[in-house]
Image (cartoon, rainbow, N blue to C red; front, side):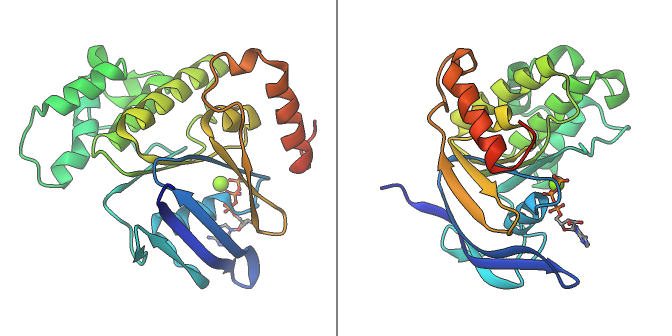
Length: 245
Ligand SMILES: Nc1ncnc2c1ncn2[C@@H]1O[C@H](COP(=O)(O)OP(=O)(O)OP(=O)(O)O)[C@@H](O)[C@H]1O
Ligand SMILES: [Mg+2]
């Protein structure tokens, strides 16, 4: 049996009396891939912020690798829709920043070069964000997220501003990189098809503020999107979330 990595033990959270998350009990296994879906305003970002250690549960507790979480961990990495790329940093400066913050003195760490190569960014390494396309910028932000070899990747709708093709390219990169590093992935998305591609398990945040878990039989299947069953599953999920089918 795989070891429980993250345990949310009866976690509740509210903003100024408005209950958002109610009594969530959830375990995430090490190396698992989880897609968190739910309607807008259901509390997905709030849940991610709690697991990141940016906010503390009002009731209940969060344990990661046996330790109660009370501040952000350095092994957790984040990727948000707002990329936070600085206009004065080139691609290679942005990607090496996490290593510098950790005290690495190596200006030309071979890891940086290898990651830029995998991400198809070598020819862009001396460019500034404003000289890149939206998809390229997103790949820079992903590379910066992965460079520190995190054990937990928290992503909040990082593909939502991308066109369909660029989105699929980024999804493939995320899957490949996660598998090679064996990090646990928790990915928030509005996009049901994206959740079905990236999530081995689907975590559904209900209107009541609780989470239900569902296995995804299409995860990791080659040509999943060419199977009718894939779309039937998407329709079921949309109904469950009360989205327009
Ligand atoms: N800092 C805050 N102060 C007060 N209320 C907040 C705050 N952040 C979020 N909320 C409220 O909490 C609820 C959940 O917000 P959250 O951002 O977690 O939702 P979400 O599921 O991520 O939504 P979306 O899909 O639109 O990003 C919303 O009703 C929101 O208005
Ligand atoms: Mg959100």
